[in-house]
Length: 548
Image 1: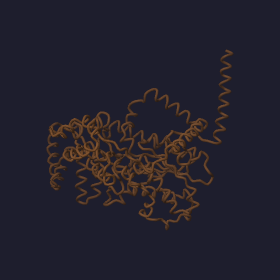
Image 2: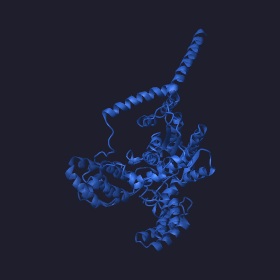
Image 3: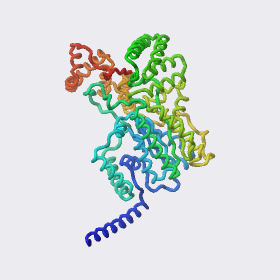
Image 4: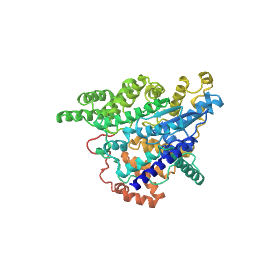
């Protein structure tokens, strides 16, 4: 018993002592967050103690908010800063600090957790972009159906426990700051981002997924689980924002619906054998007519196939293309949206995301705002269909798209008087996009990176990848990375003679690397040597899936 009493006594003393240390720590510091979030704050000059006259705008989200391939030269954050400098007096603009916590590949749980962790830094406005990643990233879905390993859960639990305390977080933050400073001195950040010049190929072939793990059946139980998890994380943001009286702003999902066909289309499982056979006959005829540019008859055949099975995404996409050709742009958009919703391999957010945001906006909750970026993008696009002018690929905004989103947020802050009174804003001074864009300095190296990165992101859309790589090679004609990626793209497109022509030139220049490549790709090696084997390179997974 005496030993137990001593133990209890020491525990009480420790608890009191730690409580005092924690109390003192909270005078100078605040609880922390993930290392990535902490690193963002340190790199952008965020201090635990907020200066009295500082107005803080925190940005959270996925690659769209981060800036993706345009980062760091052009981001929504940078455009916010430029617009504020443009329409505010210098002394007001200097008071605003915009901190970007967005991360490539971030799902809604990371976004919500980051915001909840960082409210101690007292943001005046928090803006969010959460739309695509919960659906398009396989790892997020896997977390719903299987638990992480025990060791990983213990480690995460310990980290979550420690970050709740200002003392532990302050020590960690100080150590991280020293580490980042040493790294900066040792290796200054590059001017933009670069591509490693190495021979490109895909050792595992051109199929990047397995249907049982990577496909997401529309409106399935798993689909609903993802939707529920995403909504719960948005609600978590809302509760924390309202409890701390922090205005929260959500951008809805921005997508380029046209130009990128559904990645995976499948027939309804309810079709009988006879119905499927008839559908296949009609669909094949429609595709043949479409390829021959006999669009009137193709439309008729697609509509017949749609009556048998309205579940096949590519038919909706084709009808969207035909409606666009006929200048029926609203009809085209609806078909494109339906095609996206029926895609078994998500490449964009489904329509349930923007439906949720519409409902949230209609609810008119105090301190909660929804920016309809989708509508703004459509209004600024030719015929109301978003294209490459505002979105690079399926989901990532261009520089102009980033500027449009930033301006939406600035206008909201002005209209709601979340910062200074309206009379201190000078919208008559607002420069045009083209004038402000001159401040965005993208070097040739970074522009090259943008094109190659984009080609990698859309690699299975061969025509788009080809165009991006050609633009990259216009900047760096001798790039090994771009040339080998283009050769590989040609091979996958079935343009084998063009691919081999490029590989011959590369082999003369890089004989050792070419030899290793041909060992890994015997089919290409055979064709290269003139044996011309039967073409057995698959254009997509078996199982009867048609890809674009």
